[in-house]
Amino acid sequence: MVGQRGHDTVLGTAGASGAGAGPVTAEPGAVRGAAPQPPPARPRRPRPWALRAPRRMASQVLLVQLVIAVGVTALATGLFLAPLSDQLDDQATHRALAVAQAMASDEDLAGDLLRAEPVRGNPVQRSAERVRRATGAEYVVVLDRQGVRYSHTDPALIGRRVSTDPSRALAGHEVREIDVGTLGRSARGKTPLRDADGRVIGAVSAGIRYESVRDRLTGAVPEVAGYAMGALGVGVLGALAFSRVVYRRTRGLTFSDIAALLDEREAMLHSIREGVLALDGQGRVRLVNDEAQRLLGLGRPRAGEPDGIGRPVAALLGPGRLTSVLTGEVAGTDLLAVRGGRVLVVNRMPTEDGGAVATLRDRTELEALGRELDATRALLDALRAQDHEHANRLHTLLGLLELGLYEEAVDFVTETVGSHRATAEQIAESVGDPLLAALLVGKATVAAERGVALRLAPGSRLLGRLVAPHDLVTVLGNLVDNALEAVGAPGPSVPAGGEDRLVEVGLRARGRTAELTVRDTGAGVPPTQRELVFADGFSTKESAPGRGGRGLGLALVKRHAQRYGGTVSVAGAEGGGAVFTVVLPEALAAPEGSASDPHEEEGR
Image 1 (cartoon, rainbow, N blue to C red):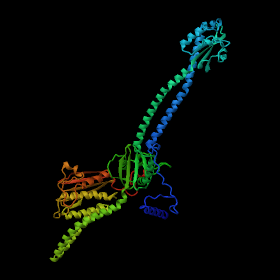
Image 2: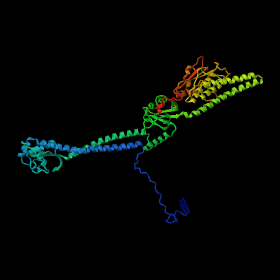
Image 3: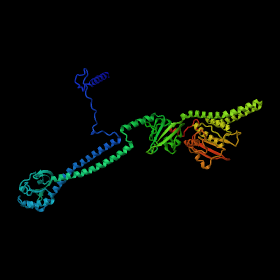
Image 4: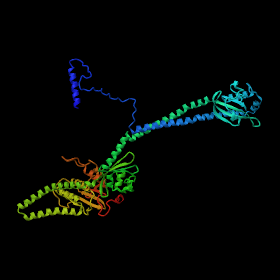
């Protein structure tokens, strides 16, 4: 870099000094110590005629198909024309032999040959010329046993010995050959001439011009070439159509792009912390990544084979909600399913070939965070409601003490504490999950602050362990909030068990199915709106200032019920009001010591 910079400085100085003195001619050695610089290399321009190999897969397939089509067409044409010449020669020699045989079969020919002299105009010559003109042969020659001609196309050759060896024909054999004689190259046929006793007295030779055979071969070439070009055109059109199909199927990718996509796909599938399961059009598993194997508890069906690949998903997992979701019998997004004690969130996306790709997320990993969040919200609601209630109670207690009514103060404190404790103990005895019990205790406090009695329905009992407690908290919390709003605005407190403003919660377990009912004494839901109340954004109330849009609570309840494969419905209550019923299958975990999933053993 230093040398280069110094060189630039010298050149700049020289240019500056010569600026006022006119043009300066550079001479060798003008700058001491500076080596002569080679001229800069010109950039190479791409040659317009240079052929570049196509990169896209469809183009490469098309090129290979075109080369194969041209090669096969050329090979087929050559294989057809190669034996054609031999076939034409064979046909010409057969024709010449047939002419010779026809001439030799003349009954008078043998007698004429024995009586005539080998001169012009003899009877043999006249018979031979008549046959030659009738058959279109080049020549018909009759010769005796010495090989002397008695007929020929050229009368000057009559009486002379033939130019080719007649020994085989004179020996009684028929001859077919391509040979060169006095008239040039011809296809020849020779046959012996016999008298009445069967003795060979001479021979008959007939010839077909070889140029006519060559003309037939040359005339067949354009026709064969036409057929070949037609076949080639059909092949080219087929190759073009197939290449377009390949282009659409491969999205115009190159072989390197496809290989890179496969490598990236494998790396992504085995690195993400989300299960991926791919099915073909017949419901068979064609891809399953490591996380899906872990979540589904898949084992190897046979040694050396991938886990579950090629097996129907129904046979792999067994009947159940998870199988119904994966096969598309149950449609929706973020659907819940249980497998091996895990709560899975499943999403299914159909593919163009009739298959599907499903993603699996482990919901159990978020259960602890969901419990803490829901418990915190319930605690905040309860504290917010109790803040007003406790303030009123403290003011009442302070007034009793200032008035000197000590016994009444003691009774007031005892009644207040006992009522709250009785409600909490009743809920704790009927509800086994602490998160759900805390929600009901907090909602009871909020209801009491609004002047509404919230109680458990007779026979309510839900002591089993919940698979996803925060989901039931969401469902029950929305139903209770909706019921409290339906009963009315906050007012004076009503005694426990009062029927004027009441919300009654029922919790029951039937096997692993949880059934929730919430009854209120509000205005109820008209029959024409009992389906609409579960739609997103639908509400019979106007949004309060400072709050978001209504119509989301019941829609959320319906989504949770559908994700579990359950139902939600609303009906009128006796004496007025509404009754909401939610059925959640598989919401309760299996008891200790039993399979948490009816098909867990099969997946092990």
